[in-house]
Length: 113
Length: 115
Image (cartoon, rainbow over all chains, first blue to last red):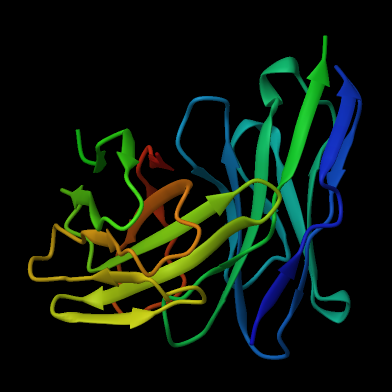
């Protein structure tokens, strides 16, 4: 069965610091990868996704993620965070054929002004 | 605006009672999902439906039931058999039917508490 690990549960950064959130999955076949974000008081929304092609994916609000197949990883990055990036971030994966999606446990990011 | 509507936002249940959470979407999506979100555990899949009149158990289906009689509706019933029902419940939908690379759209959630 597929699984997703997010090792950072709570991250605190100052504004302008660089961000990298880890995401590792366990599945040897073709995967589709997603990062979702949940801002305080808002619903979950898609940040970026990878299906195929260029392993470096750019999303909204300056976020990007790199798919490294050999490491089974899909880490999320942002060069300079803002206070408005304070949110909970979820990595998700599904495998070909069905719509079942597995989510990681989430990382709470707190950005201090 | 198109989207997913979950109701009610807050729900209280007495022990031993069944309760039904509503989820409606007007996005014309084929697939719909129910997740449970608990602190530190992320989102766990309860049930999903790829098409009308079809649904599959997710990872934590015990104590829950669903129906998918209409494309736009996917209600979740939390039965008295669910031992720890207090949680935040999220409904989602996506397009594509059996195509698995489509992102999900989420509702605002229902917070269920046991009295």
